[in-house]
Length: 436
Ligand SMILES: Cc1ncc(COP(=O)(O)O)c(C=O)c1O
Image 1: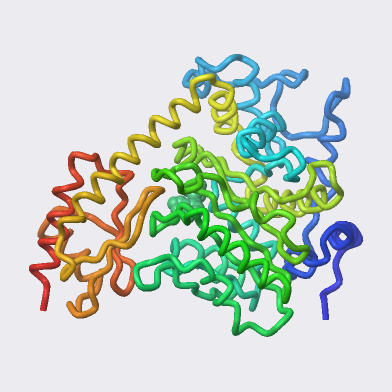
Image 2: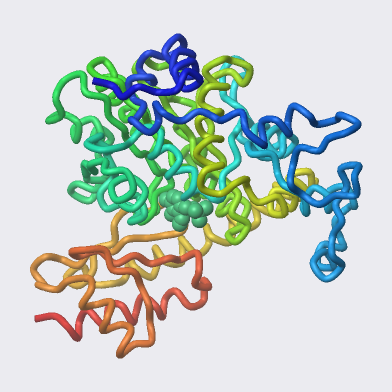
């Protein structure tokens, strides 16, 4: 039995059902209840441009301009005055339209015009985008397939916050990525039951991106799943573009998953954190595979806006303005490319350093992208990665992340190329010292 919802929420749900019955079935109880209310931001948006606009509680000069304090805005002196004004006042709840348009154009480079995608909805970093999707589509008992090992925050976003149930899909079997792993993980779920899958390429913690052939197999296996159940495929594109090997596609799988099957709905979470190296800026985006002017896009946006308003009020204006200024810079793409090359070089140096280590002590997992590499401790050693991590901290002045039971993650994005061989030497030495 479904809980009763407000008339406005019922109308939004109906708009979603009309365009995508599967996505409507995927809504969580919270996802069904939420809809953007007709309160202050809604009424203020309707009043925008009126001569007398006394709707919104922000302090202005009476004509839409900010009354900024010098001490606060002196750090923003280099911004053009209009941008500075927008940086100081409230952002629209969905994000600034010009930023959304600019991000959408960047997302869609190389994507055919007929492939639909909504205006990206602005979030406060990607974690926030993930938890918005968790609120909308996860919820008690919902199966959420995650790669194993996975970025630990998925547990907080999906399981701890919403009561969903994580289903692990091994991302390395016999030293290789198995493309049908996500489909296999769902085999034991009752037929017809809606489910979610999280795809994260380049991956954290693995630093792996599938080849073209692996992508084709992966997509085909998910289409097979969708024949039997509504499936939301969340593409966590945090590390989009950071691919270092020729022949490994850089594009998000989101685009390939669109219109594959009516039961298969991809959603894209991306943002400036890693793609534009703006970690503290906290600008992320949520995008669905529907035309921006469709009713389903409006209904989904209304639901997201309700959730964002309840938790944060509105997204951060100043970092949106900084990002938008960057996106209009003619040199931005060349700067991103240079950063990609720097990381690609570190990735290569790390590979070479690992190539000379003893396989009796460390097994590097395949990595070709992103920011990380994973090492596995051979089972025969009888060591946990936590033991090695603590020993590295205590005796070798070295910090890595331990992922239970036997993985160690190296974030090569935060170590210089020159330091990587020595880091690897210390890890190998630590394992040798602890070996039983
Ligand atoms: C796979 C993955 N997704 C999402 C995020 C979250 O990004 P943000 O810092 O923008 O919340 C991270 C951050 O490390 C990540 O590794």
